[in-house]
Picture 1 (cartoon, one colour):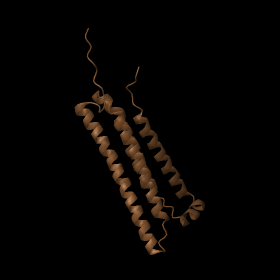
Picture 2: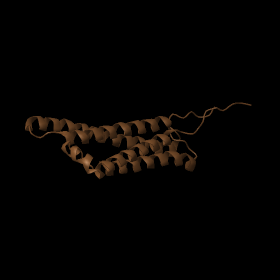
Picture 3: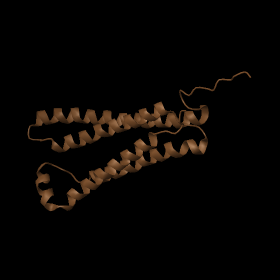
Picture 4: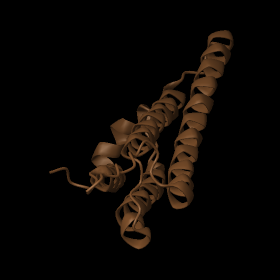
Length: 162
């Protein structure tokens, strides 16, 4: 028998926990001057902690919606769109963090190569942001379509003659 419960909320909760762990690690690097001194030379910037916390709250809220929505409306969200939402969100956040760290490690001594690297990094960051926004549009479509029409890709029960 097929279970109607989704594992999508668990994916978002685990991602939120990973983001909180990242914030915790970032915070503890700021608390140890012996470690922070050598990291200061590598352009390690501590305020990423706030970004980690905000994203963990966002991913936790998404998990709550995926968990509570079917119980509140008696309609299950599309698993396919839930997976697209999760993986597109995760991938775009990874791209954004990569570009943040790449920007921090850039050396502005050679202006021509710096401008070229800055342009390509900025384009990658914009692509990551647009990917994140696309993931949230997928989430909104999933919620609203399910509310008004039922789950996308759901099969209607067959009527049998007795």
